[in-house]
Image (cartoon, rainbow, N blue to C red; front, side, top):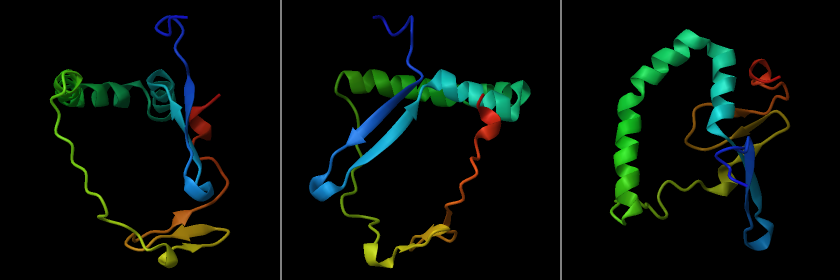
Length: 117
């Protein structure tokens, strides 16, 4: 099947780690995200954003073309910015990480309800 004619709305990226450190992330297709943003912010805001991001898209196209022929600069900072797992505080309502001013709120109300059917 040609996915250009029938693009997927979502994909799942699964990572298997050593010792049971597994994770799954959902990846929403650009057309799905655009619909969600349009519902939340409206056509005028999205149109303005599209105009502002044209330069970024052009830069990304140049980078992509170079990467496809093997010309790309990778910045890999192994071991930098690590968090000591003993300093992570997890409760029923939030997760607190060292180095971050605000905790992560674990409330159950979806922030995206206004963006979906």
